[in-house]
Length: 344
Image (cartoon, rainbow, N blue to C red):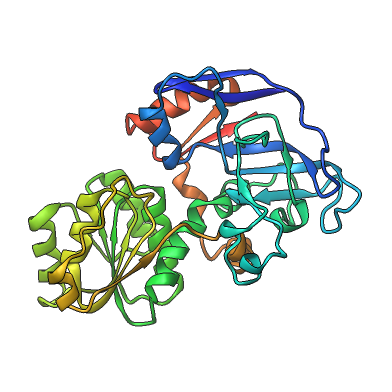
């Protein structure tokens, strides 16, 4: 089959790799119908040294089950399924606690002999714990919306959930990428009355307004903090959802949150030290967040998509064929696209 491989920074290729096969009785083989490029894919795309053993890329996909191992019970050949961005068995202590990303038998896509999501097919370990059947056909118009369940919508929702967003509160969202826009959608779902989106790309912030943002602040740093303070009568936001992953974004989050408020960071952190010191300690700021346990949220969020209450798939603004996936990476890296769908 054909799959996406990353050799080094800026060097993405589509090449032939071994066809996936059932290796364990709990495996499934899935023919991928639609995948996408994630913002987190751009970090290795910008920085990976040259390697003789390139990894298969992609961790978000919807597909059709082609074959299952003898112990698989919850999905069968012909089912349309979505895969979260890590696989998990669904039965270990961490999975049962709602943390499938900490599954003792789980792991990421594209490493250790596991296929990636930007290819024609994938072997799915622990299919019962990982895959979720979708009540749609493989050519459904809802596929882009449902694809967000694999990562980006669940990550935005994780930010809102861990921050403790409640009805009537004021929420600030830092970052107008796909995760930030998903956080806006999620804050709205949880009842936030005012949602301040901090971003400076008008096309994206306009979409954020459609998703529920009541205000947009384009300024960054001290100027951005002052703007949010002004909008909130000087107090700051009750909850801040940091969806970028850079140190400056977390510093800005601390600046716009009110005393006693909560900052949730879900942007993959690209810094070694957390800039929360004695001043933040004195303000009783709670810092939470982390990697989203996407598999734990899929059933909760799917009904909102199926009912048409939310349309998170609008974050996808470009589509490329699998053979042109390198162009998809370029488009996102150069900010010519918000999020790119990949169709095998």
